[in-house]
Length: 184
Image (cartoon, rainbow, N blue to C red; front, side, top):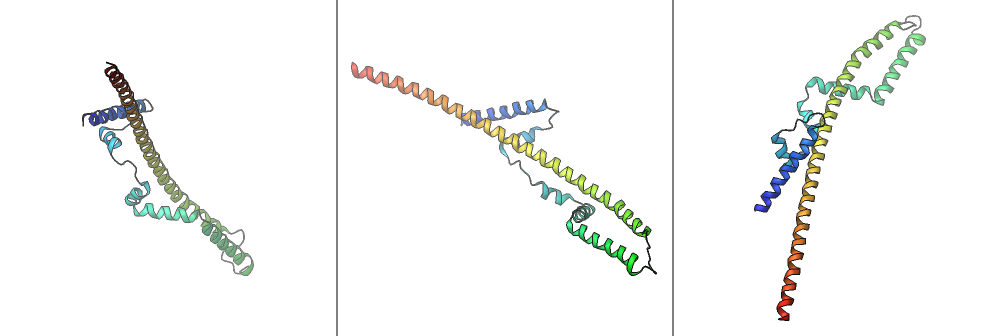
């Protein structure tokens, strides 16, 4: 039990040393509670699930609009609407066109669409950037925990190797003693 406590203590010291090195790189904000989680708990999180739970209705709509606005379905359907608009006003309704060439009303509709669509896409991109930052932070913690575990395993292997060396020396001494006793 004492040896196990020693390993835990050394593991905690190892975590502290790694975090101290990390603080040199632009100030780490890892606190004591997180340090204990790194030692014993589960760190990884599904960022998408956590984000979906905290999303407002407007954010969800913005994501859906941005997803649709960047799809081939939107591009093809928008191209068809533009073609129908232009052909309808320039050819079919040439005498009674509600938007004759040079299609001023079409330009107004396209400008309004762009004015509305651009901020919606920007909102979605900002949310994606935040998800990326959270994912990077989560990856960092997972990598940090992996580093701690690997260092701890190195420490344990070193202890085993030291014990093996001590055991080998003890066996050699015992064998030498047995030989001496046999020879007497």
